Image (cartoon, rainbow, N blue to C red):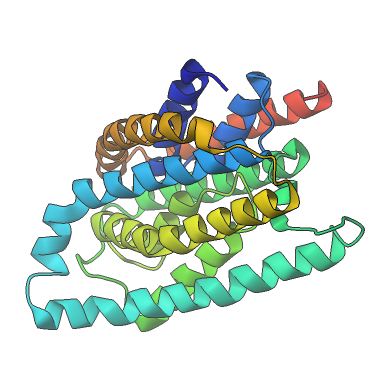
Length: 288
């Protein structure tokens, strides 16, 4: 894995992570096209670094908005804490249940099976991209037709947060099912304004990212234990470079996302995901 590889992957991760097009699908496909193994420990270490970079991009980009709404005073903080906690708990329950179900059924014959063993399988990524694309596209069209009745500028209540959390949980086991695309779409369909749906979705992302990073780090510890000769220290510095590239690309992506979301072009991300699903399906049939 060269520095050029890391810069390319950092740029792809930073853009795709914060656009509703599934960063994991784009990173996996890019790794395959570069001749890299998406499931290898070095790739896992790089993924942890890239996720960390994009998490800080979210914090920097939304900090002013969150401070003016969620962190304005203690009462505002308490008001948003409940929905975030409910959404996160529902996500954890549904996501973990789905992961265990897949590991016990689809991967039952694989030794030390983990859901990550499926993440490089394009035959799973293509339909997930297609499903996300249809959801985003349909939500975008619905929003354009309902534009005469703009949604109230409010945050999700506890019930709506539970629904958004459930949708987020469905995304966790599947590379290609965009988390941001699904949760923002869910918020819009529930009547939450586009700006508040976006802010809530990425607040959930900041809460969700540390456990995801911790899970990936634990996989690295297990890989190191099974293979004591594995040397990850040699690429640690380059992974920091990848995190910086992902951070900068993430800021660009968030500005793009906000502009298209507020400009009524949300459905275009759905069309892109459907087209990407077709391309990934073609790559799978071509032997990648």
